[in-house]
Length: 130
Image (cartoon, rainbow, N blue to C red; front, top):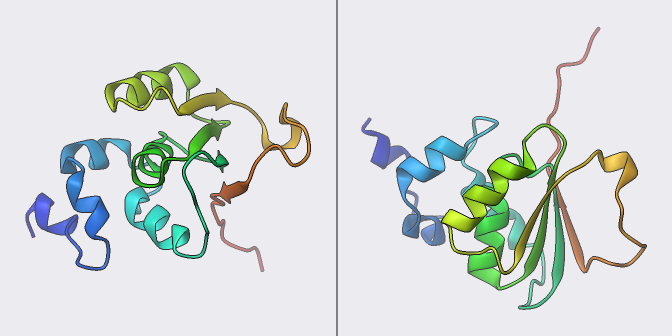
């Protein structure tokens, strides 16, 4: 199946507006981050201007998507990916006015309680030992 066909789904029409090469370059866990974010956002009442913590954002594609599609302010937070690289990616996407990359450990975040209106948390599941 051609690369472009793997990224097309009628279920997630918002994702069609994004360059397939950009999406593939930003995948950090094997799944399409735009599809996952769009699916998760169905359960949230996101409104422009809300503050969202995108915890475990990887390469910040989900953060870019949240900003563009819902107009929210996003703190793109990840321990394993460089904030500098995510800043370049965010700037290249034209959303630096509302996406703020941070490299931080989730156990020690510098935010006060109730700072965020919503938290999106990406958890990587590991196999269980028997």
